[in-house]
Amino acid sequence: MKALVKSRPEEGLWMERVPVPEIGPNDVLIRVKKTAICGTDVHIWNWDEWARKTVPVPLITGHEFVGEVADVGAAVTEYRVGQRVSGEGHIVCGHCRNCRAGRGHLCRNTLGVGVQRPGAFAEYLALPQHNVVAIPDDVPDEIAAIFDPLGNAVHTALSFDLVGEDVLVTGAGPIGIMGALVAQCVGARKVVITDINPARLALASRLGVRNTVNAREESLARVMQRLGMTEGFDVGLEMSGAAPAFRDMIDAMNNGGKIAILGIAPTGFEIDWNKVIFKMLHLKGIYGREMFETWYKMIALVQGPLDVSGLITHRLPADDFRDGFSAMRSGEAGKVVMDW
Ligand code: NAD
Ligand code: ZN
Image (cartoon, rainbow, N blue to C red; front, side, top):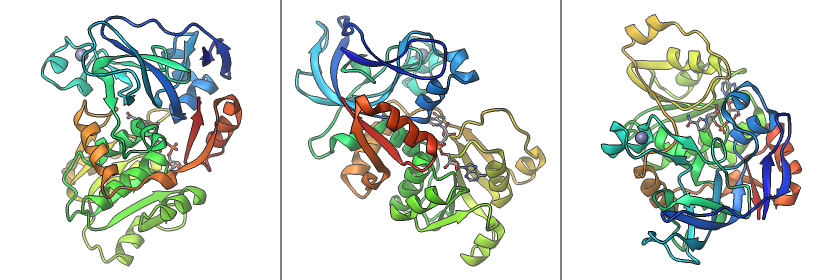
């Protein structure tokens, strides 16, 4: 089969012919239809420090996908050939304390599809049946192809009660935009999204995020004044991984505010911890999606009020992956979806 492989420890990815993966008794073989490119895939392409530490070579990359069941292992009872599926890309161990308590997202032994084990940028993907998620008929393929990052957004946004709350989202990348839309859908009062890239802010507003702010041009203090907010934000969703954004967020929170942190900073950075203490802030780190609560809620949201289709700005055949990756690296793209 065709697959996009990190076959050498250097910059780039290569389309290669590799064997179709073999499946064990508990696995599902998926004929991949569409995949989307994640920022993580760009790190793997760039072969930066994180990728060098994390990714074994050679490895098929990619973890955002939708497809159809092509074959099932002998012990698979829940899926049948032809069924439309996506799946959770974090493979958990099943035996650590958190796994056994039903908190798979907190597993200590998580392995990432397309990061530490063979990925979805391929014609076929083998996935444990536990990780497979059936896609209802009324959810389009390209939306299901971005369920992994949408799940990040939903997990982050639904970490705290948002009803009637003022919510600050820092970073209008695909995940920040989806997070802001989720916050609006579930009944937040004011939702403000910041970025420093005008193209990203324009995309956010095209998708319906009501308050977009260029953090280089307007301070959050000024924004709050303009919106008639006198005390500060109740909930923060950190989706940029940028130190200045996180510091601005801490300053703009009300006392007792809650911050869910998804953005990953390329290097460590300092914050004023005394502000966290005297403002009595709650900080919560987010990794991946809750298994599988996030999936149920996300599917219900896209079947209902949440429309993220406008986020997909590029659609191309997998053979044109170079164009897809350059669109991602330009910082102007929303989601880039490739057909397999
Ligand atoms: P992205 O890189 O497309 O978006 C980040 C955005 O932050 C960019 O638009 C950038 O211009 C903006 N930004 C930079 N500096 C800023 C500032 N000072 N103020 C406001 N915005 C600023 O990333 P994405 O794909 O949307 O993902 C969001 C973040 O989440 C990334 O850091 C990514 O690495 C991380 N991530 C984490 C997980 C997890 O499980 N924790 C999963 C996926 C992605
Ligand atoms: Zn575990």
